[in-house]
Image (cartoon, rainbow, N blue to C red; front, side, top):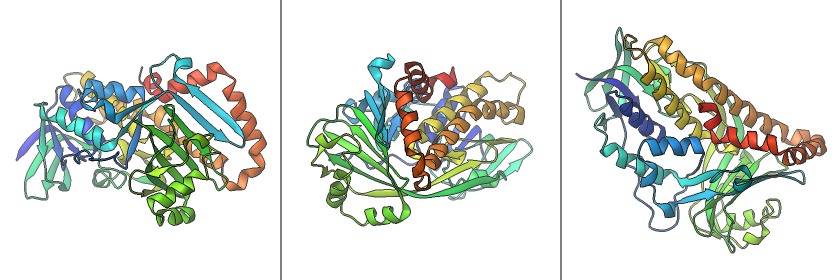
Length: 395
């Protein structure tokens, strides 16, 4: 039976980042069920796009992955505008004294960069077979692989998404509430430069429509729409969806981008608020979507997962020599380190979702007043930008 210090279950971005970070912390890591990232698209950009904050960039730089993302696949966000009820909240990188508010990158490009870093990390052993079953033992976990092999690890890390098997094997409960919304995504070419600005507006039906800048003269749509509307949007061709989005450009103060032309296929996924009742158990730690899923309006889902990775690696690196790797008191330090930011993002995104629901249209004047007031308070805007960067909660 093969044995390592840590078995990471989940071959996505968070799982691969966790394997690298834990190996750099001096641990022997098995990365289970990880395949190679898709090849770079010959035209345009991939469907799944992420906005990486400063803390995530710092982590990827430390993992030697950031510099492997081609520069022409990255877009720095220099400005951000959030619009609702006729009011606008603006953020500007120059005014905040930062290089960028965020960096937009494709999921596939980030994963290819992590794959390259993994090739040169001797502390990680890739195990292509997924885990079929896991059982707790007195000194860790025994894993059965679908291909028939077995391995043992002192710590089991669940980075296997919102339907986490690791969470189930370890008996950790889950609180989940569907938003009755679906995120509809598609990339478009614009008729004019986007100015490196990310745009977001709350719609009258309680949805959220965002356009993220991509390299060149393209943008990525993330339309968090009520399920009924989303079902209609998903039936449209990319060209028809471009026309529907054009009708929303005035609300985004972006009429100059029209006409839009399709630059990719239409995709979608259901939205849910989800949180594990615990993120650790004896010999187990949950990361990313296995631990928490928030509304995408703030664009921080992947950032939360990568900052989970950073916190877990730091806790395990600092543990004393006599402390077992999967000892619950050790892992509880990781849980405490992540509790504040995760809860804050959950409350903020869920609170905004409720605040802008169709049933509260009578609050529109007060919402507009609050947005305008925030826009005129530089110290508050600086605090919000700093918290969104992730650095303030990790320092």
